Image (cartoon, rainbow, N blue to C red):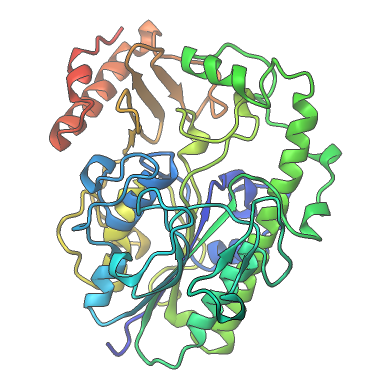
Length: 450
């Protein structure tokens, strides 16, 4: 094991690229996450394969698509025979641990996960299945054998607010007296709703100064977006939609600022221990947040913001500082890529691809495609460098030009000039689902392109 790097994954919930300076964000100062990008690699086209917590996490951890790992929708457990990157590394002699939200063990809430169900993460004392608690405390007065969570309306302080508390548990893991290399994952439940944060982060940003998305104003929408926009707190039917969105953004950004400060605490501890440059540090999330784009909120629709997510990786031993990876990656590609970077053989069940050569600056054949799997099995799509295409059963399918229409306001699906593009991408989507044998195959075979 001598010379093997550590792996630390910092994983947030529902955090869009526009929150980070390294992705062009201008509202929040995020120096610690930006440092990871400046001293490592930033992925410009990293997509979750499903913009929903459970299936996205399953793809990221196993390298397999949702219907293959089994957790294709929220609150469905991961197949018990799935092999996570933590299990691969545990078998290779790594010390493994997990702190925070898991969301791969079915319905229990919070559902503190015991080691026999933690899928390779041996130290699972602070792994909980689901929930977005704002205050967590240690086993009080020794009367309980698990931490206590409080109602969402109760906001913790600098020790008990969830982001702080979970970060503290990660620092304890890093401080353990153990010479083995480690694999640790910190899964923060913020900035997912309910959107609130402890002082002083709840007052850092003035709602009146929050910039609104360019697509906040009314526009023509596909039928599936029209229906949900009508119910959205930021939809055009709401008389106070702008004020609601500004308050939401101010608190959402406050959550992000606390996350960045927590990343800074972790990097400082690794530096104190002389372990930072021996540790591969990953920062990412499970999916994005629309936050008023097209009058919508949350995720799991078809617009890119929920799918294209941040991924930065720092490791001076194997990644050139300032590297920019703009090839198209999916969440299923993470497991084989990180194991390839570490020089550890994957288990062989992965659907994803090993892109570690790109991180090392080496040439490699690569298909620029990430496939979209929807939990309803009624939508399926693909992201390429140029386009997003999504097919919708009994609804409006879409084709957006990612280069010339980044706000996704011009649906080109029925443009005669792009009929060959639609046909070609539709064929790739169909073949992909046929190879996997997904429930979408039947209607995709019947789908008629315009």
